[in-house]
Structures are given as structure tokens and as C-alpha cells.
Length: 241
Image 1: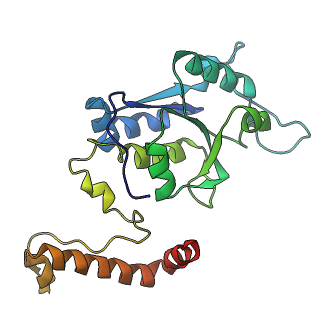
Image 2: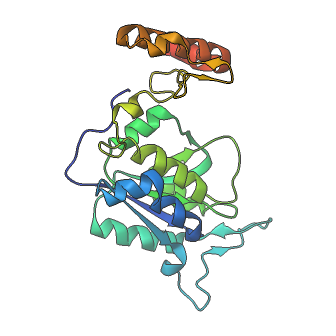
Image 3: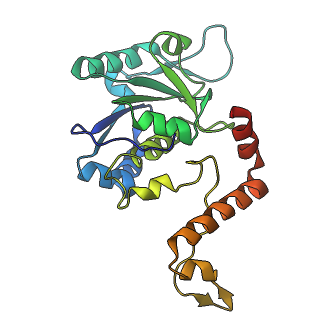
């Protein structure tokens, strides 16, 4: 899938449920995500799960049944938060950020950018009560084969990779279409001024002004780089054809 999301009169809303919401404060209010919200193209709201907990200490985690190290996020505060959000608007997906979820890639980002509102649930400690995954979430997504201390950083990655695809967010919408992986290839090399620095020159073709030849050069360079650095992408493409 190459096309980014089509224009919509209603901004995409992404709600993030977190045990440590402070980790997301600067990430969602600056750079591309901040710009998207100031333009009214997206709305990103971070929720502190402790606001939906009960009891004197507002606990959101407890020891796992059966014993073992670590703590598990409880189902009740998560369910309360989801119920409130769903009573206010509709959502296309409730996504749990999990190491064993569907691998996040550009195709999935494109797909999610075309969907409606999203809810992202950040795991923490040993994860969440399995009943959350079984009954409350519609999708699980992983940002890689490694473990983070919490899902907040993973949620920020997913949010950034989706919101930047929304029309109007980037200054030049064609920029998103030429990113790595949009065509199953890594991006070709880029250069800017000065044309010569320390004896290192910008390729003459890029200074020629010949758009067709430049486009062909960039495609050939993308293929070359992909063969050298990510041959698995070409193998995957051939397997899908």
C-alpha cells in the first residue's frame, strides 16, 4: 500500500492509556505530533490509569496468580477507562503494545492511518491481565523483538509513524510517500548544499535538473541499498508476488 490517508473533516483521535503518562508528555506535544495537533489534524490524549483506579492508594497492578516475580496491570482500571472513552466516541481499534504482537511496519502504519480513532494501551511491569488481551483489545502490535520497561515508548513510536501520514501534517505530502519501506525498499541517499565539501561531491545527476533521470537514479540507488542492507525486503517482495 503506497497511498497515505485521504483528507477528512474530522481529526484522527488517539487515546493512550499509560501507567507512566509523564513519559509521553514532551513526545506528543512537540515536533510533528505537536504540529499535527496545532493544525487540528490529530488529537492525542494521554490518560493516567491511576485516575481510573479505586482504593486509597489507587493501585493499578497486583501480584500474579500462581506466584512469580513482577507485577501485572489489573483489568478493572483499564476497563473503566475504555468504557468511558467508548461512551464518548467510536474507535476503530483498541491496540495493546506487546512484544509478541503483530510486527509494526510501514504497511501497518499506512493501514492504521486510514482507520478512525485509535486507543493504545501501554503495557507495564509484567504486562496486563490476560483477560484484557482476550476481551478488551482488538489488535496487538510490537515495535520489535526486544522488551521495553513499558509500552509508553512503543505507543509514541506507533503514534508518530501513523500521524505523520495524515494529509497536511507534513509540509510536503509527497515526503511520506518517498520514505523508506513505502515501496518495499529502503530510501536512496539524499544530499544538500554545499555541492562540494572537503572534496566530497554531490552526484552530478542530482544537480542536472533532469527529473526523469533523477527519478531513475533514485530508484536504482534504492534497489542497490536494499540489496546491500536489507535483502530480506526483496526476498519478502518476491515471495508475495
